[in-house]
Length: 109
Image (cartoon, rainbow, N blue to C red):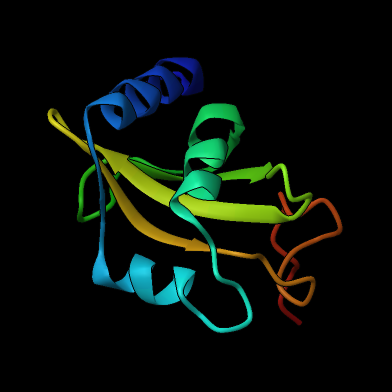
């Protein structure tokens, strides 16, 4: 499925309902990050797909990235379903794991 179609499917699912996994809530509530539902929605509405996981065990999912109004980068892994958008995780990417633009993983040495 082309990214644009999948992105539309994600955004459409998010208008119905957004469900967060326990893992996503744990990551969002990490003391040093505190990511709000509003920020997750910003990524879903304004972000781009930087990795695609068509064979994921939870169903087709992807990693999205965007800078929020607070000016910080946020990554969101999500999977659109018929009646909702599943948010698998959301976190602030680390410069140790991501290139400067937070869109490309650093090569492991």
